[in-house]
Length: 437
Image: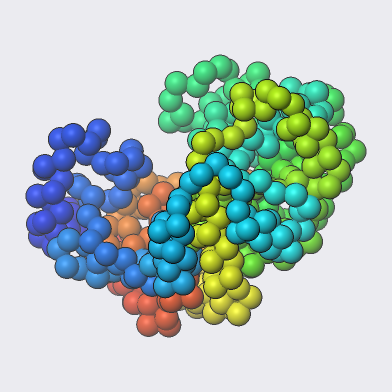
């Protein structure tokens, strides 16, 4: 780690200088998680295009993070950029509907199956809104989520399970109330646990990712998601699926790939092609009840909305994205890249007899320093922060950027086999450095 840190400092003198001159930025960065990259200071972006970016020291990187899904379409996508520029020249936000918004809603219905749609500026906001809708139309107070889930900075979902209690997730600062008052956390892949949590009769909704991603990729076991749908229907619980990350499974996400039937649906990040947007979809039955709520004269103080939500610029960007990106033929390529990346990683650790594993979900893949976890708690317990930091810093020093919070790679249509091979080669070299063989 000392050797790699010294190498990092030598490679990035301009980023180091920049880091020393940002006194007006809290903690020296625009957002706190930008401090979580490996190295004594963040590298500073100059330009990003396609599957690569360049820092201010002139070093080019293969980007396997892609803005943690926000740039899954590829950076500086030409058609999306042109659409955004055209709309900006015609007006970005007027608090009025547009033709683009109607087109986008129809396309989202085609892709994901939900009947009615509205928009936010992030998936976090969209999750907040649908939780409010669920409580309002069911009259029930509680929410169920998975242990170690992540649905953005939504207070009642920043939770973990501790024994039989639901508590704030480690690192969640300043929770407004004890999250056990609003939320029950259940273990992923544990239907008996879900049945116990649902049987109280006070649960409005269950908010899930079809596969966990933000604690690392944890895949559902056969029959688990069918069981979730059965239990939620049995107890009158609305099922909300958040596909903000799991859109990597295909153009219709896991919902279409696996034939899921949510009552409500949330997505954000990548559908904007790099612009800020979130969307929430409702089944016909839920939409009928929510439209009654939205006909009330007090809707502007309902806790749902935002002055810039559904703005013309965002809608133009989403229309261009869904027209030119996230298409079936592109997923054929990105899934192949992810499969080759997975194989390269697997072969490297198996040659050395390491009891590691690698998981893949469509165009996304991740390696673990343990056998495949089946729950969020298993995944959290297996994290090795020092080894994570070493692997990430080693990769950065050789021109590869992984997702900072775990060992995850995501692929865009612009990635090429040579990009995968570069990662395979440096990963193999890292294991030689670690093991001496």
